[in-house]
Length: 427
Ligand code: GDP
Ligand code: IMO
Ligand code: MG
Picture (cartoon, rainbow, N blue to C red):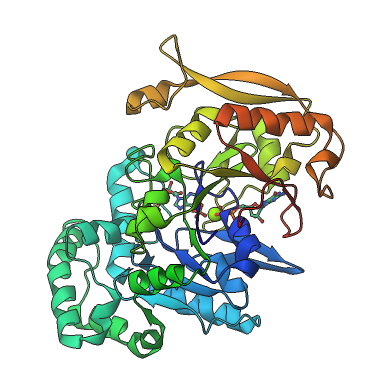
């Protein structure tokens, strides 16, 4: 099973990092294909806890080549900080590769990110403030800076100058400090020698690897509901977070993908602004946040918590062509007597089974719940599906039915081994 995509099937933080790390030992390449250091993946390996942002989880698996694909936006400062931190903890990062077509997040775009949010006022997105949106906007606007530009100082300077014409005008109009072309150019050039040995033609190399029967995992940042096209626009991130993004973000064609795995929590969370039909504002939400440790890995913000939403799950299956779902954090639901699951929405008095296309409809959507009986026994040591309490098994089977895709593995704790495998993803 050579090419597998792992995507978020909700609003992010589903446990994609753990899912990817788990495959790591059997994988030749792990490719991050979208997003940047807005992502935050917590991965626990033995006694060690790692918080990855820019680097894919595969970096933790010896023998697996970690790749930053062309669809990623790279903050070079964060890249080397993360490398140094991992090296300091004994992780060998020498295999890390980076596409020369990946775009760089220049310092001015972090400033613009904050300024844009302030301008939006109460319509703000709640971004991570890492310069992600402005950098993707520059890419589309054809004023972006790419990794390959680091190796031609005069072209780099011209490109920075071109971008700063627009950026400085915007910043000056907001009474913000502006940027100097030489300072920015030299800041970027300072990284060139360290980046050079990592350069990688991701399309050519990954296609060759697949021809040779190697195993490649494509690891998404964010999730379907944050996708620039298919998410709850404008409350989204600025990249293609879905399976299609694995193709555009790496240079591998769609027919090469063998399996698409969506990761979903047994409930659901969201960070930042935007509609969220099953959001809880009572102590049930507080409980999920507390027991689930639902605080952002990147910004530390408390995550908004709610019940599992099968409308979102069905949508994730449709938009991504999911072949498998990995359900995580089932253990967090232990001890809840009746577990609500959203089976459809009520919008202006009508029952709606599918994700609404219209933004206002999504803002008005009320969840229609089905209540499933809970369980009280701890499940964190369960290794087989049959070890789970009957009601926990029934809960998973009902999610499977409602979501329209097989649930291949179930997380019962944050550690690598705390996973029940029903269907192997690499067969
Ligand atoms: P990602 O961004 O999708 O990789 O997810 P995050 O790392 O941001 O958030 C997922 C969190 O849940 C991390 O802290 C994981 O260690 C933790 N986690 C993953 N799977 C499980 C599970 O099955 N049970 C529990 N209790 N925690 C889990
Ligand atoms: P992982 O990969 C959850 C959210 C932000 C904000 C919106 C836009 O860990 O699942 P951006 O800075 O990307 O322009 O912010 O997207 N967001 C995430 N939420 N998990 C993430 O990544 C996220 N990355 C961005 O909170 O609402
Ligand atoms: Mg995360």
